[in-house]
Image (cartoon, rainbow, N blue to C red; front, side, top):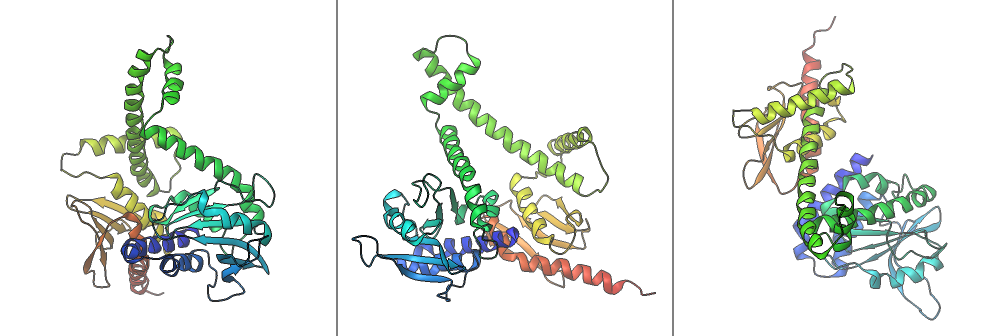
Length: 377
């Protein structure tokens, strides 16, 4: 189910990329992006007022006739309130005043502030029946963190469980805030961060001269650390593919040895072929899509000088896709029943999900041919 949600989010991301320049009003933002999110991602019927109430009104004190853009109803109770802003508009606390007021009156436990691309999710962790000032979950459709998709699934109509959502909200909130703090420090380390790290490696007094020296060292070490992590991820992806194609059990030391061997082999290749992290990530997406039809171990990869191939059963006569990533414009090549290839331009890896049905059909076509060719009796 999470894979299906990820595919729908990827489709919506493509729509945002293609149409955002033409969207000039808040109302257009709701129609183009927010209603599809409510319908396709969260699974609620936007045309059923028993599920989705547009322009929801609940008088609050002296504030009469104020409206919230949408209220989502489940089991006869308002569960989610949604306030929308124009696509591209920055989202901040001043935009949440209506949500704050309506949150208590409507007895909702979830509030969403969105501009059609970014979605901020709030609940009442700090005080019961009072909306928190900081979101517990932030999702940007056009730059999706796939690790958050399972959390988003808890808010869908079929899986909605308010207790599960609220129980996970506190951890999500602080993990999200910590990640943003770390990202800021990695981008531009401040004085306190430099001092904190310096104290772990330098025993002398933290003078101004030491501060200036280590400010540059911390920034340099941070960049090298991030590069090392990216390289480790590439090694793991290459090693993981080698292990996935064989069903035998191996020890952790053997696994590490294979990963190391794959990495050394990759770095020493003299045929001009270079497998990139982006190609590996794209391969993992295609394999995840094809897993609905066949076992993951049957999906393999072969890199060539001009393209990166994805195959069924490691068989060149059963190509599922080709990744043409060696030029400024990236393409994914897909195949019809006659094995004719059509290249489709893509701007981001998320766009691969747009072709999920084609990839599955190709897998099914090859498998059905095998079945039909198998002699009976």
